[in-house]
Image (cartoon, rainbow, N blue to C red; front, side, top):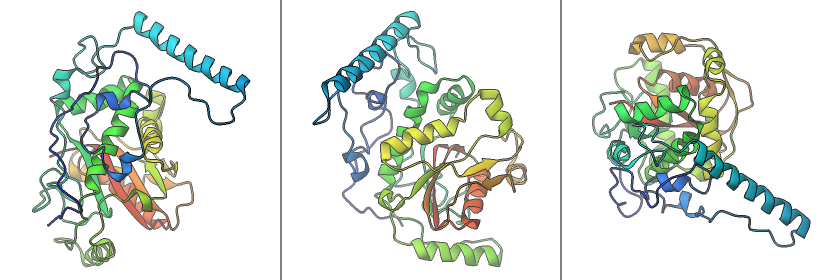
Length: 332
């Protein structure tokens, strides 16, 4: 049974805005479209919202200061002009005014980490999980939203409709969920209904990490993302999770390790659980040294867990010490 390492945290079921977003997202505006819950923990405490504009460092030469001030001014002017020409509309319902309107924010349901499965991150699975048998290779798994019509649309608009302004939004969603998960312990249950070799390996993993917080940023060496296939990259023109990983790295102060390469695989959205498992088997390669590292592995949506588990197995086979998983959405 999970136990809180600190006083109970406030309830959070929906987005809680402090300001409206009327111009394209930049790093100082990301928090304006995310809830306040979870931002008071140690991970987020060192981050504060700063007003836009340049603040010179001590000893900065005047010429360099003027150059940077001009750069900031031109960037602000560019965003204002862009907003005048193409006013921001809700990416989910097309209502004008905000990147995500109030009505749509109310339909994005956060996973309460108190009740989530510590092994696979499924909502309400901490006591008896219907999505896993405690056999995942991850030391813990954390997801931000319950996968539904609105959250699915948000992820799809980002990666398929090229709404790249959502990358930092998705990143901070993951960061908020991780910050909350830091108050709850990893699973201490042994694997069930699996082969003897699996049970022994997972039991060793559970014993080694028993009693730890589900998220421990101070012990992480890097953030790794589940990469897109080459076909998806060519179709979209960018790797959607790489952008999220870099925004998350800036938020958490943990470097990105671009360690995985993915071979060809079928789009998994229409595949069954067993087909997903077969589709991802052997498709990942490690292209950067990861031996002895503790990694945070992120993906957009965890359904059966086939992709993130195969990626974790590949990293562990190359010497990674532990893998903590995280995603934007989790099916239930």
